[in-house]
Length: 292
Image (cartoon, rainbow, N blue to C red; front, side, top):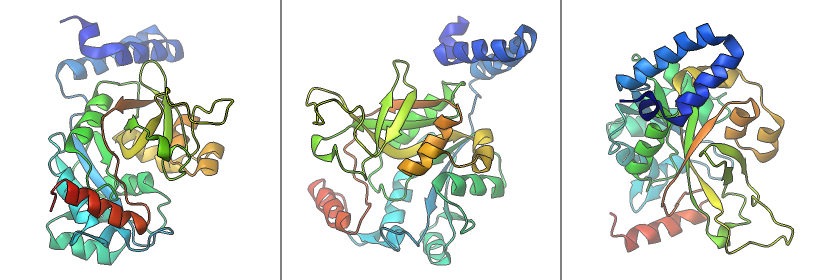
């Protein structure tokens, strides 16, 4: 099979990048390593899903344990994540013993993490380094998406496996016009090769009229994301960046530091729980879909 068919455009871009930085000899050796991994189907093959959970949320105290049709939200998320075929294991990472005790009660593995973790990525990073086994990819599964589709988890894992020049992958779906100016709905723009350009709580792109263009395919970022494990280990050491702090979006630190992020488009009716008012909306959706 030709190399291009196995490695894809991402691998070729990676090879070119390394060639410029390190010289042709080193590039050839490093490229050979990556291509051998790709040929053997073992490239980034060991995958774990981590569900970060904290009790002290500023917008919604105790959110992971809030009941959704009688079953706590974090349990619903864990059950959905367990259906993903790409995950070798799923764990909950928390700094709260109430959450830990409950999760152990329904059979989840739990990793206790520090209260000092500033976001889900840092919590995933700490959990990764406390695990007994080693993994190549860590999937950060948002605990407030109890209807996350296992196919989306598998999709972002495959995207990262097929893009060796990226250290991060995530998913987007179509943005509904009524959510265009909702700051809780994060928007995304991507390039022609499927790599992220920017994320914002504001509407992007933003046209001169200041109004939503009904003919433009705006993209909504879904919270789920996966990381190369070696990158995730250094992520907490990267200083917070201006855009990250201004937008309060952890993925912007990745882009501002020059790393590449692969994005897949999916058809998903996003149903996150950000505020107490969202619980009733979620329950109505689940009743309509006959989900118990």
